[in-house]
Image (cartoon, rainbow, N blue to C red; front, side, top):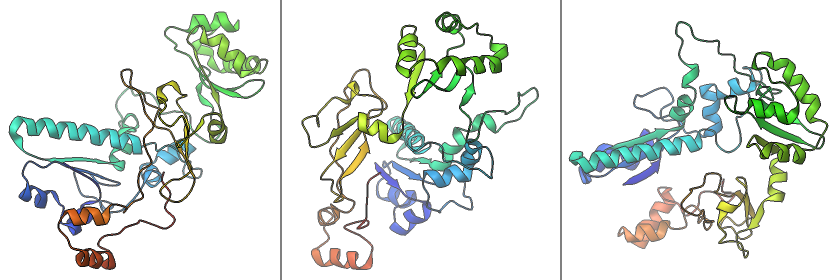
Length: 322
């Protein structure tokens, strides 16, 4: 199996199109991931791109920001990067099953544009009796309604999430407020005043006993200060499952040549296996000569490819990992 991040045009130039690869090995699976690719060709099919560009293209920024005049990036962790990778994993699974049934290799494809449209499917269809598309949006929106939004406490902000089906009665007992789902604006005003009377920790403790979600809101800098560990320190082999869902790792001697703080890979955790801190990835191009030598190219041929720009031993002198 070959996994590559490239457009159709790039694969053609490299001689790695699905047709050319299957001529070499009919059982081969090609997992192709790109920005604007899909089953049909379009005006942007061969354009390079990344998460933010596709957010803008698909309207995510407009929806999140409240309109074309105030577009906003949705999150900073890759709103559709992760989903695109998840879709690619599913496509690979289908291709493996298809091959196991005797149907040979195939193309497993995913793209940012496909992931961006997938998460917006509920907003793409109109039908008789459909409720209005009136989702809250804009720079000053704090949440969906009184029961699912950010609130300010006496010493900071937190996010409150109430399960309407099972937690309304408990919530009313804890706060002393009668919860009326049909009168959420008035409830919201009352909650704003109530939550300002106590600290975030107080509200967390109160709601935790009833399994009501109450999450403190911190800046990225604050999270890093609280959850920073050293990749080269004594905790480098720590099981990240015991950490907060947001943690940071400092690579003091990263291959890129800089000290780099990266988000730890523990936001998603398995119930049956530990999440171990991986080693730093080598700088792009570090293995170019070794791999070309293994493919039986001699030193002169490799030097010529490097001189022509066909191959490279580094991406950029200013490279930083994401």
